[in-house]
Length: 231
Image 1 (cartoon, rainbow, N blue to C red):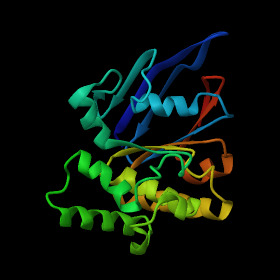
Image 2: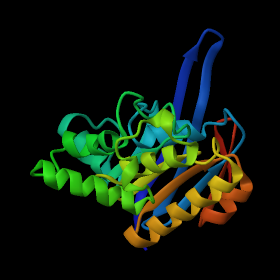
Image 3: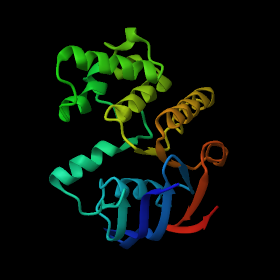
């Protein structure tokens, strides 16, 4: 299996009133195509910072990030836009990550419109409907707003939005931690089914060891910004 993502000596420091915070300190790893790397650790250990740095949502202090042989760190403009098509994110809180003024269909359609992926309104509607079906959302919910749905359905909207551009790699930033236990299993099973169907690669961030044991092929353990174990 080929390595789709490589992270080498990644560091991300933040300046605070109390000094420099070493959020991520010299972390290196790789993820093979179609596999899941679980990143676990207590709150504040740097898990989410790694995910955001990989997607260039945060600029690393130093280190290298490679995706399919292309350097991610420092990418801007058109190069960053092309990378974003292949690298997406599912956020922890399915309520705050969705625009409350947009309906389900509008939220899912937004990335398709930004990247001009559909040639007509009909094609756009068909693609949105297809994505809703893939993640298990009923067609009748297309005009609903985030506050009208439960957490599980909201997170399915987030998954559909992440899938809209047919990415190869998705950062799952604690995607089930805000959900009831019964709903967690449904979302985990959905993510695993999608991975099998589309050969997706995941970086799965969580603090729940039972979840990461279920979904991850390899596990990276973080503590105070440092990688303390990989198994």
